[in-house]
Each structure stands twice: as C-alpha cells, then as structure tokens.
Length: 214
Length: 149
Image (cartoon, rainbow over all chains, first blue to last red; front, side, top):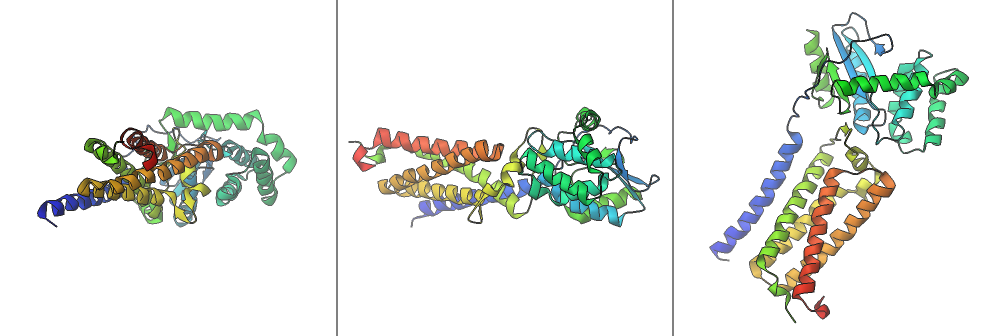
C-alpha cells in the first residue's frame, strides 16, 4: 500500500471518529438555561405539598404522558422525601397535544384533587405511565377510574368532575400560565421562581435543592 | 451500454457526504439511547413518542444503531469504490441503498399510522436514505444497462 492510500484511509477513519466524538459531546453538552420568566405565585387552586414555610419552592410544569416527566417522577419523589423540611412542591399542568391521554390524565388528577387526593392520583398515574399511554380514550378512562377506586374516591363525584368545565378550566389556566412565561417543553422546573436546566439524575437534583435551601 | 464505472466521481462523493450526514444523525440518537437519555417533550415535538415506542427497536436492537451500521456500511463501500474504482463495489453499494429506502418507508409508515408522531432526527435520516436511493436509481438508469442491474 502506498503512502497516498494510507493517508486516504486514515482520513476516512479520522472523519468517522470525529463524527462519533462530536456526537458524544453534543449529547452530553450542558443545555443552555431556558430564558423563562417567573411563574405565577402559588394560589389556592395550586397542588402543593410540603411545608408552607419551606425555604425552597419547586414548581413543575408537567405532562402526565410525557416519557421524560415519567422518568423524573421517581427522582422527584426521592428528592421530596429526602428534603421534607426544606422543600415545598407545586405541580402545574402542561399537557402536550401529541399525547392523546395527557389531558384526560390531568382531568383525572383534578377530579381526585376535588376530593383532596391529588397527590395519590398523581403517583398512580405516573407510576403506571407506560401502561395507559397507548390506551384508547375509553380504556384510559376505565384505567383512571380504577385508580380512583383504589384511592377511595367517591366514584359518582369523580366521574361528574372528570368532564366538568371547572376541571377543564383549571387545566387550561395552568397551561396558559405556562405559555405566558415561555414554557415550551416538559418537564420544566422552577426553583424559587427561577427556571433550572433539567438535572441529570437524583444527585444533581438534590444538589440544586440543597443549594437553594442554604 | 454504458458501464456503471462512468458514474461521475462527484456524484459518488455527493453520496458519501449524504451518508456522512445520515451517520452523524444516527450516531447522535445511538449515543442518546445508550446513555439512557430521553428527549424532553416539546410543543413542537413528538420525538419522545417515537423514540420510546415499541417500534424503536427491532429484535432488541435499537433502530438508531441499525441506522448507524447501515450508514457506516454505505460509507465504507463508497470509500472502497473511490479508492479502487472497481465497478462491482459500486454496483453492490448502490443496490444496498434499496434496503435503506425500504426501511425508511416502513419507519415513515410507523410514524404516520402507528405512533401518530414524527421525530425530526428520524425525518432527517429518511431524507438522507431517500437521497442515496435516488442517486442509486439515477446511476443505474443513466450509466448502466438494464441487464446489469
């Protein structure tokens, strides 16, 4: 093999290696901090858990059917459990149009909220996300009603609330608030009113909360 | 009858450049896959639905990896041809683009009718594999006799 051919093939290998390397860098590069405004202050219609005088308030704009939100669910639960005295958490709806059952899931959580069980429904919906995500509307309704029974809701009231204008208005209001401050993907987290770059995993998330608590 | 070896070198280089884009795209998704990264759900999106769907793997092999392997084979084949100028190599590699095109059609069908969502990375790959297929068709039609296909 003459030198020219060796260089020719070396160039090939280098080009491929550079592409692979570049893509690994691109995947791992820290995202830029989203330029979002401050979310609306917490109101009586919000779903809040944790102490009212907590040093840290975490607001999550989320979609129950978003796989990434589902991925964050166990992370958030652990962060919340491990920061019980310092962290107050707020969940706001941002159901995306490409997720067929996201609005229904949000409505189910609102109907549960009317009976004081928002967070129980929230947990069941997220924990079983992969199960109901592909369901038809009818089947998803049955599934969510099953969750409602499981957490001990008054089913007659639940079914009435599920399709009520008030529930719809609540979801729309959350979403409109999100859009107003520039939310365009889920999950979007705000720590003490400031948007954060989605942390990779529990440790990174816990660190942000702990730093904000100082 | 025109031999396939008359395919202009610039056209082969063009195919090579297109395959490089396809390779970069497929590699990006493959790296994401193996790092367990799911893209966030965007208002303009649908990518998360496609990449987390049951169709995102074939026989347990992630589709982005299949794509990356496909583009590497295309690149190696085209490069061997550019090195050796052996017509038979070009013949095989251009035929191979049909496989990529068939897979592209399947994935477009899956996105449109089964997942009801499109992923922009997948659409970019659909574009590059379709362009490679078009180059192959043009090459055979213009520079090769029908019997030799």
